[in-house]
Length: 293
Image 1 (cartoon, one colour):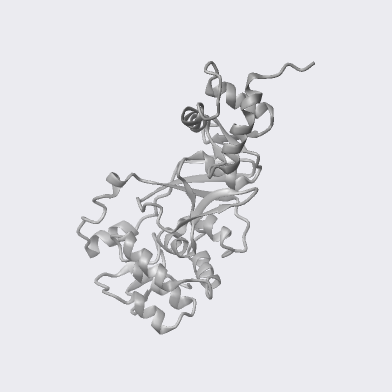
Image 2 (tube, rainbow, N blue to C red):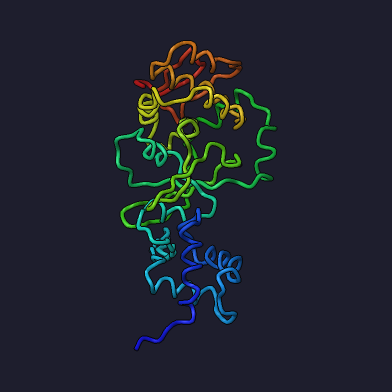
């Protein structure tokens, strides 16, 4: 006769909690936080620890164990609740993180490629972003910044056949972040308009400017331009990214009434991307871009 576990009587409450939770993937530390907040509601015996409950749920194959490795080949375990969906599992690497850049292009069907690199973004704290726009911008500072390569995150993991890049973006209070939640999936990602802004700002995380142009082309008929303008105003970048977005929209065949929304003050010459070796110049957008684009 199989010995009954003390936790069996609590299982229905635990299962009900996770079935209805908006978080389906997490680290052991995150599970411990959940355990501390809910152990009394679950009716757990006082002598049971978070690790014991975790192992109990793993043994019953309600929590599935997923192995990640970093660049130093150190292992990181992510636990997923009753799902093997990769995007749900990967989202557990960082609390409050959401998919962005090329990953969001894929989730919005704006690229035909099946990406092997996944971009998961977590935001700076508000205090780190508070003084983001106090720098005085000059043509010299712009030229100096864009003559080199765009900085890229060095924080990455491997999971199965995918490389996961963790990016640490500016604080936006998750502007334009939406949730996908169904019986098998549960994760956050940027909506269409926020995604098109993000890939214009960091094309290096989107496969380069040609991929970004393709994404803007594929977004025609779906894009809410007024929402995009509103997001861009709220993001309040130091650099004049309205010139970049206007250029992409023009390349994608948007009409003049749309383009005029982005033809506001253009004090400086700007750049479509970093480290452009062979430049061409758009007078209309005061923008340098790679030859042949």
